[in-house]
Image (cartoon, rainbow, N blue to C red; front, top):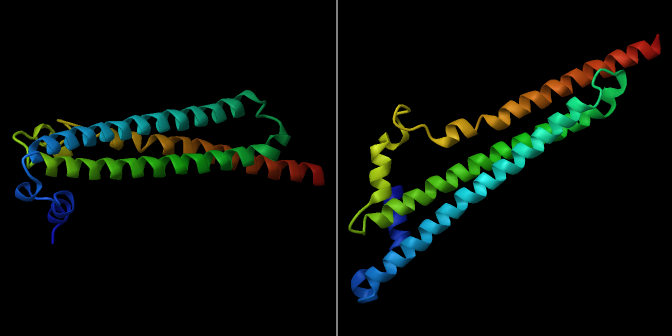
Length: 175
């Protein structure tokens, strides 16, 4: 059984004849509610991105603000940089999770639309080449997925710099 058949089977458990005359009305209402839920997922995704962007920016600003040139800087900057790397990786995984959830939601939307008189979301997806042609449409996730890695690299750089400062401080103290 294909994925599309499995989705259809799970989605349309009650058939039109068995359900009764309210089937079309209830189908449209449930479709509207489902689209609203898909929109809320996108809003939560944007709020999560804003949170992680703010948090990472605050970490970078904090580390930049404090005098980074002192030998003791490595004493706690390495911990901040590890926290930043962890936060950046969690952000990346959350973006991937939201991407997968949105993809699944729109597969369901397309299935529901197959039972409706028009299929605007499926037609829109077709109009932009189903995401395969970057001249027509570049999915936001393709851009968004790199931002956590930029911060991860910045935090890694700080970590490596701290480790070299810590080694230098040990060498100077031992001599």
